Every structure is written in structure tokens, then in C-alpha cells.
Amino acid sequence: MQQLSVVILAAGKGKRMGSDLPKVLHSVGGKPLLAHVLATAHHLEAAVRVVVYGHGGHQVKTTLAGESGVLWVEQAKQLGTGHAVAQALPVLDDAGITLVLYGDVPLTRLETLQPLVDQARQGQLALLTAKLADPSGYGRIVRNEQGQVQRIVEEKDATPAERGLCEVNTGILAVSTAKLRGWVAELGNENAQGEYYLTDVVALAGHDGIAITAFTADQPTEVQGVNDRRQLAELERFYQRRQAEALLDHGAILLDPARVDVRGEVVTGKDVVIDVNVVFEGVVRLGDRVKVGPFCVLKDAMIGDDVEIFSHSRIESAEVGAGSQIGPFARLRPGSQLAAGVHIGNFVETKKTIIGPGSKVNHLTYLGDAEIGAGVNVGAGTITCNYDGANKHKTVIDDGAFIGSNSSLVAPVRIGKGATVGAGSAVGRDVPDGGLCLTRAPRKDVSHWERPAKPKS
Ligand code: UD1
Ligand code: CA
Image 1 (cartoon, helix red, strand yellow):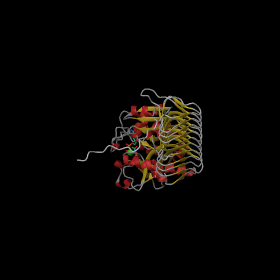
Image 2 (tube, helix red, strand yellow):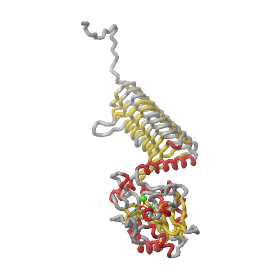
Image 3 (cartoon, helix red, strand yellow):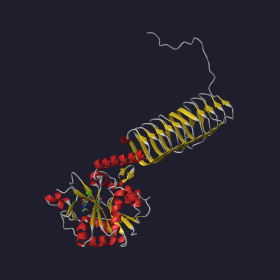
């Protein structure tokens, strides 16, 4: 099979974004536009991915440095799409085929592109077009009476009749690399914009007797480019709709598919229920029957089966064991690892903390750098004082311990197995297994106490 090279044009300025950030680094679904296109090329099994960059190239390259095997080619002056492709040709192999994509057209599906690639492998020139109610601004597809594609005319060069055509060029095309090289070398710039138009290769292919196939994208949005922030926002919604549909197709229940955002990847088990205004970031795994309440943010989280997360909770880089209950208003920070059946209640924050099975931390608590055993009960208002101003220290609470409300555990400190800390204690030394620690000052009672009163004037 002829190998596929994907050339991604990304040298344009993106002036209309009104941003210091290069256009292709703006995000959809939490990921730069260009990263979406690189991923698409990867999934098409491209042997070579070439990005033609221009403005802000350094920043683009640094941001996407994690992408391996990408060739970066500079187009110092933006002399047109044909000129941009010409910059990439020296690194391409004539034995293969080339697919041209755009760094600011992020959401074209594999199902839409694969037929173009297949057709190019059959020796044809394959184009992707779209039918738009308002075609203004786009190049128009000109066909003959038999319906065969003849050429593409840019709006600025089009006759009034041609401007009336509603089939537009998306710019995406696939063809033999050797053929493309020959036609690109022939391009001129005698047109309204004085640019080297890639679109002119279509007429050249026709002259060479190469069959031209135009595929029409069934959803115009998937070939929509981003030129301004409105279009970016539109694509974000389109993308989120797709993510929500994918979750529904995997069997999740979304109480409102329009009010869930996926900025990364979510894998759901069976019968998962996701309430409104939930945001997923990074990689999130939800086990079977997990319920996520409204207004939760889950980022890089592993959630076990039958976990219930009540509203307004944030879970980041954390693991929650099966059957646990989290929130409402809980914050699990990075390094929180909860075993099965743990209860974390309202206004509880955990960080770098391991909590054993069945332990309960129900109210108003901070646990940082802590190791908590099984069956522990942490009372309301407990604080691990893990930071001495310079270093972080560890708190260990062993199995079955009971921490009375409003206690401060001054780390490093260990509360032994089955030990009890009386409410309101400040614990700075270890408590032995089975022991009781009380640091409250002894109570003093004065009967018939008279409160001070202001002198009467
Ligand atoms: C181009 C097509 C037009 C099509 C439209 C779809 C040509 C001549 N016209 O028009 O038929 O309907 O896209 O959006 O191809 N780019 C470079 N270097 C350049 C010029 C452009 O990298 O020198 C990149 C831009 O970053 C952009 C893409 O190519 O991603 C398209 O460029 P743009 O100037 O937007 O082309 P249009 O005039 O809109
Ligand atoms: Ca454009």
C-alpha cells in the first residue's frame, strides 16, 4: 500500500482571533486545534506528518513538542496555499500519496477523510467539498454539464454566476505525491490575490486526464475552520455535542447532553449517571453505576464501581475506591487515594493522602500528607498541620482510630490503632495503640458569674 503523508497548513496569522496566541494553539475540548489535526493524521496511519508553520512557529513547536515524528517546515512568507504545500514537498516521498489538511480545521472525522485517502491510492485526485446555504468567502466547485469537477474558483476571482454556486471547497484534498509535485511546480499567481493557489491543481489534474472525485462532508461543521472567536466557540459546542453523544452511545445517562464538557477522555462503565454541568479533564475513568452529581469537575481521576459523587466536588489526580461517597463540596487533590467504601463529606480537602477501607471523613476537614487506615472516623473540623513553614510532614492514623472534632494533628505524628483523640485536642506527640489523648484545658466553673456591664450614664 502506498504510504500516506499528511501535510498540515498552519502558517496563517489568524489576525481575526485578536490574540497573542498563534491561531492553531487555541483550544477545542481542552486541546490545541493543531493537536486535533495531528491526532487525525496519526489515526489515518500517516507515515509522515508535516506541519507548515509561519507566525508564532517557535511557540507552536514548543507547545506540541510532545508529538513525536512530526516534521516542521517553515513558510517564511505566506504566498498562498499552493506555495505552502510547495514548502513541504522536499520532505515527501514520490512513491506515496499526500493528504492536505489545515491546522485551523480541527474536527474532520476519520470516516470523512478515509475515502479520500483510498481514492488517492486508486490514482485519483480526491477533494472534500461542502454544500453551504451561504457560500460566501469560500472557493466554489465548478462542474461541467455531466457533473464532473472542472476546477475551483476563488470567490475574489469568480464571475457572478460562479458566486451563485453553493458547493464549496473545504481545501482538503488527497492525491499522488508525484502528481502533486508536478502541478505545484506549475502554479502561477496571476489572480485577484496574487497568491499561489493550491486549488489550481484541480484544473491541472483535469488537463492531465486524472479522474477527480469530490466527496461532500455531510456535516458542514466538521470542515469548518476557525477564523475568529465566534467560530471557535461554535466548534467547541459542536465538539462537546459529539463527546456527549459518544458517552450516550457507551451507555452513560446524561441528564442533559448539552451540559457536560469533556476536555480529554472519559471512559464509562455500565449505567453511569452524569448530572448537569459536569466537566471532565484529562483522562477520567468511571466504573459501573457511578453517579456524578451536578457541578462537579473530575480531572485525571479513577472512580471505582458504585461511587456516588455529590454536587460541587472537585477530584484531581486521585483514585476513589468502589462504593465510596464523595461530597457535596469535597476537594480531592493530587495524590488522594481512597480505598473502597470511604466517605468524604462536605468541605473536606485531601492532598497526598491514602485512606483505608470504610473510613469516614464527613465534615470540614483538611488531610494533607496523611496515611489513614481502615475504619477510621475523622471528626468534623480536623486539621492535619502538615507544614511547619519549611517542610511537609506526615500524619499517620491507624486502623479504627477515632479523631474527635476540631482536633489539630501536628505532623509528624501517629495516632495508634484504635486510639481516640478527644474533641478539640492539639496533638503534637504520637498516641499509642488503644490510647486516649485529651489536650483540652480542664474546665473551670464559676457559679452566678456577673458579666461586665457598661456604667449607666
Ligand atoms: C482557502 C481555499 C478556498 C477554500 C478555503 C476553505 C485556496 C486558494 N483557497 O481559501 O478555496 O474554500 O480555503 O477555508 O487554497 N495557509 C498557509 N500559507 C499560506 C496561505 C494559507 O499556511 O501562504 C494556510 C492558512 O493558515 C489556513 C489555510 O492555509 O489554515 C487556508 O488559508 P486561507 O488564507 O484561510 O485560505 P482562504 O483564502 O480562506
Ligand atoms: Ca480561510
